Image (cartoon, rainbow, N blue to C red; front, side, top):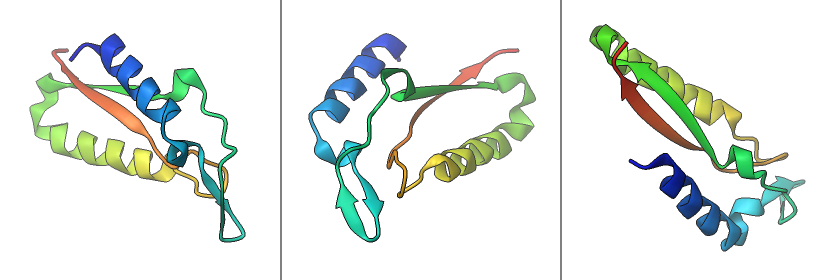
Amino acid sequence: INEITLRKALEKIVRNNDVFSSRFENSLQKFDYEIKRESILNVTDIDTIEHQKIEILISKTAVDIKNSIDINKGPLFNFTLIRFVDG
């Protein structure tokens, strides 16, 4: 996957869809979250040499992603590219 192309595509999707700039305050949806370009795509590298731990590392990454989403402050999304690298 070309990271630059993916980042540009995600930026375009986010820029053209108000839902990505939304957050909730007192059960009301607001569209005022400022999306920072550098935070559009997170990249996580997972070392494939430790193949026994890949599932654990992916699960930990998923939990980290879930915990980073804050419906009150935003953002309501987190795009993460998981790359598998050899030591």
